Length: 84
Image 1: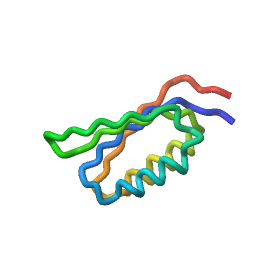
Image 2: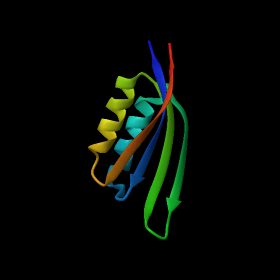
Image 3: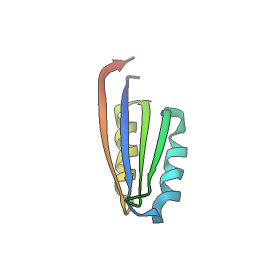
Protein backbone atom coordinates (compact mmCIF):
# COMPACT_ATOMS: atom_id res chain seq x y z
CA UNK A 1 0.00 0.00 0.00
CA UNK A 2 1.39 3.38 -1.01
CA UNK A 3 1.66 6.04 1.67
CA UNK A 4 2.45 9.73 1.60
CA UNK A 5 3.95 12.11 4.11
CA UNK A 6 1.75 15.12 4.83
CA UNK A 7 1.42 17.94 7.31
CA UNK A 8 -2.08 18.81 8.42
CA UNK A 9 -2.44 22.38 9.67
CA UNK A 10 -5.37 22.92 12.03
CA UNK A 11 -6.66 26.23 13.43
CA UNK A 12 -9.09 26.00 16.35
CA UNK A 13 -11.12 29.20 16.68
CA UNK A 14 -13.88 27.75 18.88
CA UNK A 15 -13.24 25.11 21.52
CA UNK A 16 -16.69 23.50 21.35
CA UNK A 17 -15.45 20.67 19.11
CA UNK A 18 -12.00 20.10 20.62
CA UNK A 19 -13.00 16.81 22.26
CA UNK A 20 -14.21 15.51 18.87
CA UNK A 21 -10.97 16.71 17.24
CA UNK A 22 -8.93 14.84 19.86
CA UNK A 23 -11.10 11.74 19.35
CA UNK A 24 -10.44 11.84 15.60
CA UNK A 25 -6.70 12.26 16.08
CA UNK A 26 -6.71 9.36 18.54
CA UNK A 27 -8.59 7.20 16.02
CA UNK A 28 -5.91 7.90 13.38
CA UNK A 29 -2.99 7.64 15.84
CA UNK A 30 -1.33 4.77 13.93
CA UNK A 31 -0.64 7.16 11.04
CA UNK A 32 0.53 10.14 13.09
CA UNK A 33 4.29 10.77 13.15
CA UNK A 34 4.08 13.75 15.49
CA UNK A 35 1.88 16.58 16.65
CA UNK A 36 2.58 20.11 17.87
CA UNK A 37 0.06 22.49 19.39
CA UNK A 38 0.57 26.21 19.96
CA UNK A 39 -1.92 28.25 21.96
CA UNK A 40 -2.04 31.81 20.61
CA UNK A 41 -3.55 33.54 23.60
CA UNK A 42 -3.50 37.07 22.12
CA UNK A 43 -5.95 35.93 19.42
CA UNK A 44 -7.71 33.27 21.51
CA UNK A 45 -7.00 30.50 18.98
CA UNK A 46 -4.96 27.30 18.91
CA UNK A 47 -2.68 26.23 16.08
CA UNK A 48 -1.96 22.53 15.64
CA UNK A 49 0.28 20.80 13.11
CA UNK A 50 0.09 17.06 12.63
CA UNK A 51 2.64 15.12 10.56
CA UNK A 52 1.26 11.89 9.09
CA UNK A 53 2.48 8.96 6.99
CA UNK A 54 -0.63 7.36 5.53
CA UNK A 55 -2.40 6.31 2.32
CA UNK A 56 -3.90 9.22 0.40
CA UNK A 57 -7.48 8.13 1.15
CA UNK A 58 -6.80 7.96 4.89
CA UNK A 59 -5.33 11.48 4.91
CA UNK A 60 -8.30 12.77 2.91
CA UNK A 61 -10.78 11.06 5.23
CA UNK A 62 -9.15 12.53 8.34
CA UNK A 63 -8.91 16.06 6.96
CA UNK A 64 -12.47 15.88 5.66
CA UNK A 65 -13.77 14.91 9.10
CA UNK A 66 -11.73 17.64 10.78
CA UNK A 67 -12.91 20.21 8.24
CA UNK A 68 -16.56 19.51 9.10
CA UNK A 69 -16.05 20.41 12.76
CA UNK A 70 -17.54 23.79 13.70
CA UNK A 71 -14.98 26.50 14.43
CA UNK A 72 -12.04 24.42 13.15
CA UNK A 73 -10.20 25.00 9.85
CA UNK A 74 -7.69 22.69 8.20
CA UNK A 75 -5.30 22.58 5.24
CA UNK A 76 -2.93 19.82 4.16
CA UNK A 77 0.48 19.96 2.48
CA UNK A 78 1.74 16.76 0.84
CA UNK A 79 5.26 15.55 0.20
CA UNK A 80 6.03 14.44 -3.34
CA UNK A 81 7.66 11.30 -1.90
CA UNK A 82 5.47 8.19 -2.17
CA UNK A 83 6.43 4.95 -0.43
CA UNK A 84 5.31 1.43 -1.21
